[in-house]
Image (cartoon, rainbow, N blue to C red; front, side):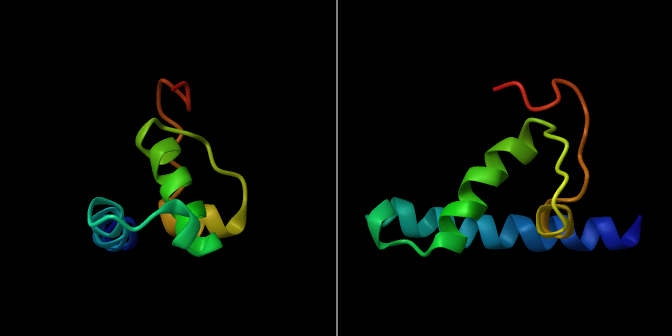
Length: 71
């Protein structure tokens, strides 16, 4: 449980930093592939998406709660 809380706190910080770039006028065209991947998947994670890739699970956890990724 402690590891999950640590990852979640880390993800919140990273998302905040990335979002601040968007709010400061950084266009999507200027963002790296990883930054775009993170922004996209953070939306899915907030909605309980069940990630299957190792990378996504390591960043966001398994999640898997209702509404199971329905946006």
